[in-house]
Amino acid sequence: MAGMRWVPLAALALSAIALFEVTADGPLEPDQAVLASLLALGMTAPLALARLWPLVAALLSGLAAVATLTVGDQPPVAGALALVALYTIAGVRRKLWTLLLLLLPLAVYALISAQAPDGGNRTTAGFVLTAAALGGAAGAAWRLRAELRRSSAVERAAQDSYLEHIARGERARIARELHDVVAHHISMIAVQAEAARLTTPGLPPEGAKRLVAIGDTARTALTEMRRLLGVLREDADAAVEPNRRPQPGLGQLNDLLDEVRALGQGSTRLIVRGAVAPLDQGIELTAYRIVQEALTNARRHAAGAAVDVELHYRDDALVVRVRDSGPGPGVQGSGHGLAGMRERATMAGGSLETRMGPMGGFVVEAVLPKGTV
Picture 1 (cartoon, helix red, strand yellow):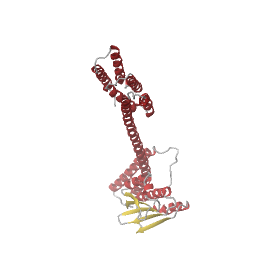
Picture 2: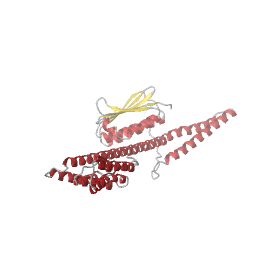
Picture 3: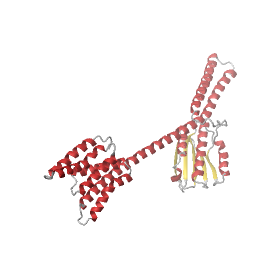
Picture 4: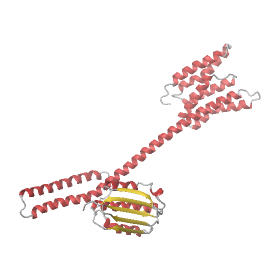
């Protein structure tokens, strides 16, 4: 249907074939030949108008078909093909109710023919009506399919855009939080290098020079990190005041669980396994945020369910597991919080998976490297 550049040529070819059919039926009286030719052209020639005025073209062809049947003639095959093509185009280009209005003249004539004592052109009228209706239905089905395809493409594009927006925002938030941790370490490098230069007795000039270079490099790195943080903060709402509090770690987990318990929505336990050891601040921040988001999901999708927060200190990694006794992953898997938790685990060099618990409920489990303190 795209372009429809074939329409004028098809109209010309079908008109010529229709005129040939009229003359091939046998010798006719001059007035009969003129009327038959005009009616044949009335069914085929409107096809040339289908690109600009599909409804007008289909209506003209349908009225010509009714007129042909009314005078007792049989519509030419080329005319019937033109009629079907026009009703198909009308079904593609216009809504269903307009197609039903176009079929009305043919339906009225078919009904009148069916009730006529002599039967009239009952069979032919029914055939013409059925062919036009099938053509219109095919066009309407084509249009509906195209609309659904476009709608689905728009929805997919919007969803992809939204998910990408969520992911970018989450990455920006993670980077801003980790910046505070990394900036602290870099600042300590600069301070310790300067302290070592000033407090080490008998330090060779070359060693002092290298310590100065270390401090300068650390301060330059810190400046660059702050500049990048400024770029990231452009995505944030200017009306929101920046949070000046220290970034939380696993030491604040009890406070977080106390806040959850204060809401009175089910019991919450903290279970610690293995030998507790100090971790890199970035890893502790990541673990805290994962637990925080998992608890938020549990409150939202499994309100009132009991929740266990487990920290398993292994030799090579920290396993963070949050398990609830709610309805299971079919509900919780529909949100965007899981994507944020995966982003955090991945950026920290770990992994995160979700699954149904052995006794039901939903489990979020992250494996994070211990890092260096």
